[in-house]
Length: 114
Image (tube, rainbow, N blue to C red; front, side, top):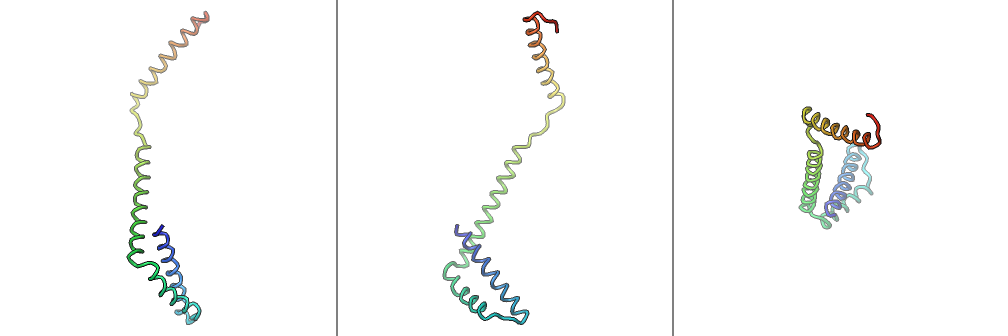
């Protein structure tokens, strides 16, 4: 939760400072914007320190890395190598023999020819 707050504050500060720099570069400086930015820059360090922001970003990066690793691990286990053709054919032949035997039993039980 802390890293979300830090990220939001960083985004707000970045957007505000960026907008102020654009206005200054164009020769237009909004005095209310300047005063808001000054107040924001003075207040925010009291609310959250730079080290807390850095820690939050590091934690967010670690969480993201863990999620990616978990997704890759899940994908790795879900993919099964294809079976060899001879092995698969052998299993099919065994199943067919069992089915053939079962059909012969049913036919003989009812006196039918198969």
